[in-house]
Length: 247
Image 1: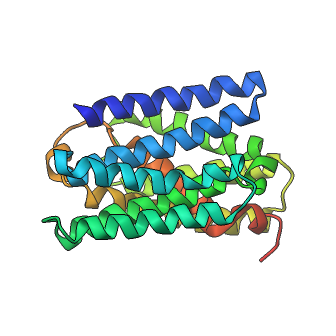
Image 2: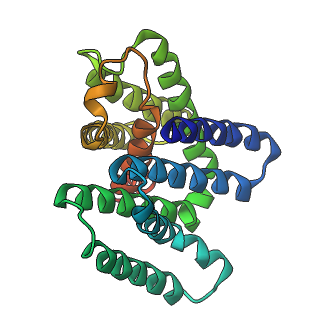
């Protein structure tokens, strides 16, 4: 039930990004992106750790860890971010040593946290702010394409990976070319981002504890796993420099 409610929140935040474009409020758009990532992280952590009373503290600390880059907005000293991040990691590791948590759960929880941390850092960076419209349009167009795909039950079909690849490739290519970027750099960036998106999306879904249960359903419920994978691929590939020919 909690996971379902969190997915509704993710949908509301995504529509919030769409509405905020017309308000021309940069800070609100960035806040929606940060909230979207933290909600996604919380949803996966509650899946991994099952939200028992003794694990709420761990989930809270991991969320604080991912949120720490936002503190740089309020504090000009960059060391604060690093201090909070590493202290949170040390506290979490210390807490985990006294818990009956297997190594698989440990690895999945920290993988999710590191990805969330890097994405939040990307969202509050100057580069993201300077290219906010371009990146936001990429995200929203892909969101609407994937939403339409829910009506065709593509999530668990045999050709889901081809669809996931070409959806990302098509969106990046079209939007980038319309924005005036050189085609050869656009194709390279689109290919790399799409490959990483498919791989990360597959990794997130396979690491979910309830995957076998939900794979029997006919509707798409992992929409935001794919969208977060896409955002991480944009960050990991450094797409903004790549499409400008800066290797």
